[in-house]
Length: 77
Image 1 (cartoon, one colour):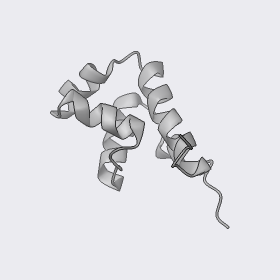
Image 2 (tube, helix red, strand yellow):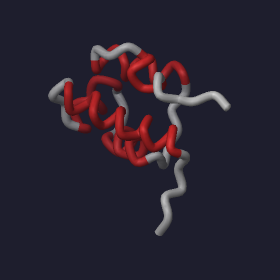
Image 3 (cartoon, one colour):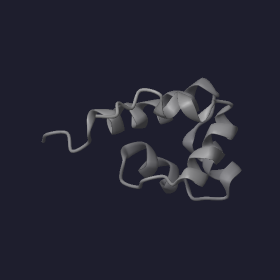
Image 4 (tube, rainbow, N blue to C red):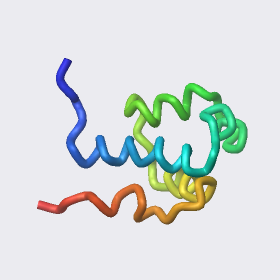
């Protein structure tokens, strides 16, 4: 099955996972901290659910990463 994500979004998804792992957290830990089900975190990381700006800011704070960590690679054409 071909990848349905743009290159930029694929990198974004990979960085979501990397940031969580860098913070030493499991998906269940993140879900608990955010008051969301674990499936929320899983769907975000798999790209089944897109994050809005507020949600990204919450994750960045939890992971102790700047928002630019997740989006600095995005190329404007």
